[in-house]
Length: 281
Image 1 (cartoon, one colour):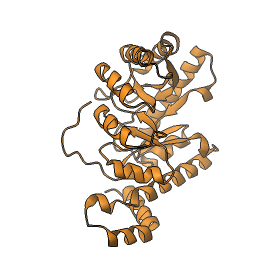
Image 2: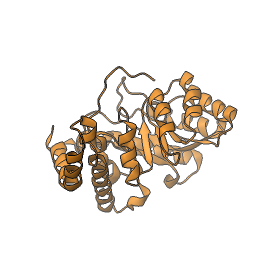
Image 3: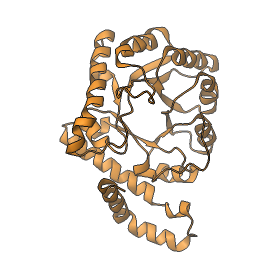
Image 4: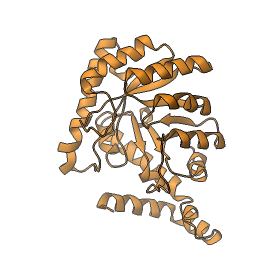
């Protein structure tokens, strides 16, 4: 655990201590039970940190969406965060989201943030009627498939983000920045059942919002901002109409300061992920 994670965990424990201690006395010492109360407290801390980052950058925090990324986490843990008032959740795996969504309230706004294969589009859209956004449209093929399935099942237009590979890593999905404008134009002009909402990127791993890492973090953020400028110019829209989805547990405060409108926070809210068996899309 690095220093930042230790501080986060300590802050969560300090805030959640009375409730957490009370529940521990009544529940068996199982790992899932030990998380009760902690995730909701962690969310409150994240929202507070987002608000502080927004103030530092002269922005309003109510224009910044926190997507609570719940992959590998139980329905009961998601429900705890839901019961604290949060409504926006994200999942990475099709099978996982179609199993969880029917067990949870239908006013949840689900964001799909994982790599999406064409043959998984229909199960995803049919299985999650309250899917609000797909953040990972990275080529025309997946855009076309989403467009067709939305029409076939008769649901309202689906909001999408175009994923941009700003780090240049071959292991990351996303359209190359040089092809960003053309893909956005395709979504906007050739896919009437999709609603283009913005751009999304996944930064390089292990970011922390510390000065010595600014030289690493800023390039992927500025690349996405440059893409947004080009997209808005090509579409003739204001930059405020094109969201930026960037920032995760390690760098979300910096991302907010740099203009992100959508941060995806997983382990800082829910704790470290557990992978009991290999997941697949």
